[in-house]
Image (cartoon, rainbow, N blue to C red; front, top):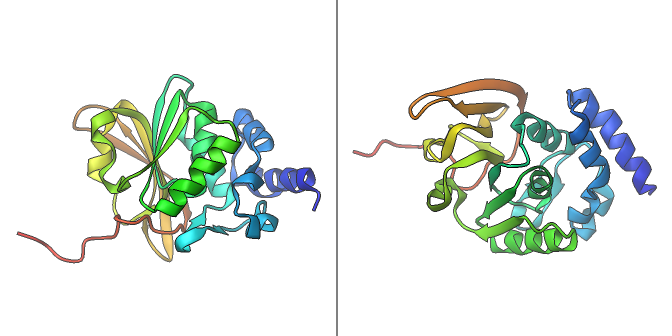
Length: 217
């Protein structure tokens, strides 16, 4: 496989047609080596338009989804980012190149180790991966400028929205199959949030974010 040609094709044939037109995002995708965040057994799938399997039944988001979420987050160099769902560490790496710092929460120990190893190999030092239940966020270090959920949720999690600073954005894929919707929620005041619907897609459910099945009193 000609890796650089495959990377170029991924950007031009998958990502750019999906309205990812931010030059800085495209440049980052051209330089950050996605294949080094893919498990060795699936390296040949690094640039295909599909989710890539990870340990414990998890998967990486398809490249065009990662790229579009990154673009829509509008991360600035001075901002602090919280990611829920580290996976292989690739989304955290993308965010780390744009932010001041990133904390990525991952509930599965095998993926914590995988992401930490991949980020260390890529010499990305402003991202920390921690084993934790991302459904609770990280209140002790809030507020965050940006929160990115690298997977889907049944409902927008209020506990995470409350950890945004005013002006901060939460990026999430919300809903249930067969159609989910990526959204950007901006906190405009202590009690007011503005939601923009971005695009329809489907993504693997993040653990701990299922729809409630019963009421408790």
